[in-house]
Length: 109
Image (tube, rainbow, N blue to C red; front, side, top):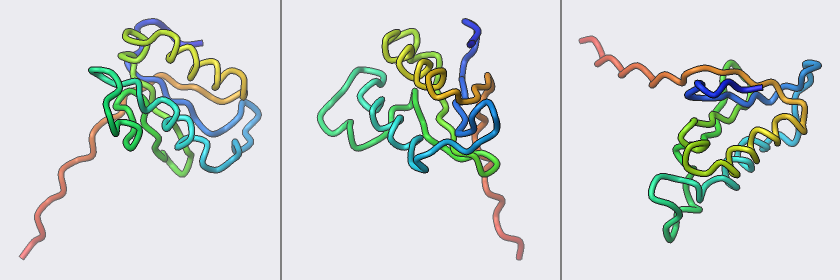
């Protein structure tokens, strides 16, 4: 399903047959469950922010969770959990790379 050389995997909120996955906050819920899996491990209050290894986002109007391969390297069982979540719910998965947003250009005078 996912090649071992992938750096990032996008779990998309679209099923294999093209239907929108519900509930609508599934990405935030999944990323919230994974919040303690982070560089340096869980710390007090770390449940209040998403892990940099499992980030909810929206791309082209589709809810997604971007899962970084560092999660696989540091917590294989957590990686298996998110990949099995995608498989069990028949969600589309893509291997890609999330690029940072371009810096905003200053306003013209």
